[in-house]
Length: 351
Length: 111
Image 1 (tube, rainbow over the protein chains, first blue to last red):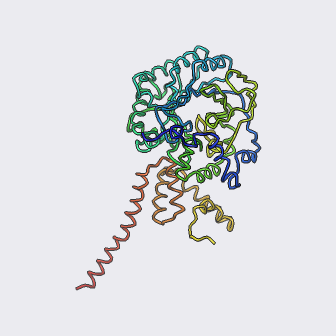
Image 2: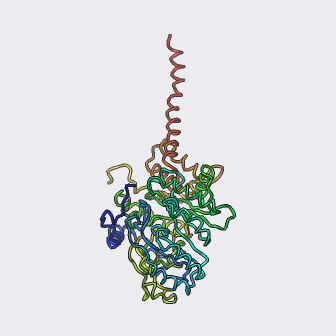
Image 3: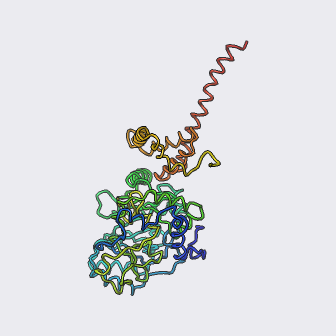
């Protein structure tokens, strides 16, 4: 694996302020492209406001066993930001009183947080039934201590959402690192073996597709059909649905866009594909993102850009659902990534 | 005046051809969009045909468009290159098959 995190490389893009500058200057400053704010105002959708909270998405840490080229978190083995048990306890206090029905764990590799299983156990005791874990798959095969993850997921009926950018080794390994494709297939087989992703099984296993370069995802159902055909025919692997997610121009993907001289063209394609119908269902309207240190954001992308919620309530310890409902969503030009074409969210297309 | 015959930015303006003839332009784009919808052939297959034809007619706009379209559909570079070789084979074959005409002529004229 040759890829390193922006932090490890001491890249100036490791600084979120620098990323925000890039997203506001150039083509957006000289008027070649409209700012997101002005674009959504055209269809009277500004300001974008949060509706009733349905999903609490908790980022339990930026540590990951992989260093994917497109990662919006700049996650990697060198990242030490990990949610403590104390912050998890504060989240649990909120979980007991929240109206949100779904707890969505993300990272980094969420399973690498040493308190991950404790957290799930406690949240389960607190009454949460709807769990999602965003797993990179390879973690399951990376170390003996993770081999039983499929069984653990099954115990809590956790909905597993796994990243898989292509059904070929070449494209998968190029984005996610050498050997990732083979390990991912092995992990998917382990998940299938305990019942995940099997036809008619209620153990949900979905795949998340991110394009492997400076282009937008194609039609979600067509991609799902192709993935299903190849994974089943060539590898005997089952899964339920595929969610196509657009790469947002932040962090390592932004770095890639700039280095490959694709940044401007990519922003043009996002703006051209802008779909006002997708704005209504963007994930920030029903999701709240909690960072490893307990701060609140409208989404995981805003978390990485260090754009906190626009509310008196800033931290999980002072959580107040009624104060957070109706808050104005904090936006910048990266938001075009969620409104292009059929739209994009952690649950795939939205329009 | 632009210094080159082709400008990649012009591809985005394709729709403007309707400005000077709305009726025919609209008919063309309606037809175009219908052609690429799934039918007896999948959209994926049609995209690969379009890519091969783009190279045959050597249209830079079309090559740009259908390379991007292929990537979005998850079409691999190996599939793209194979499609191009189909175009190349037909193109080369079209020259070489005329060799029969040449041979006929030689056989007729030469003692």
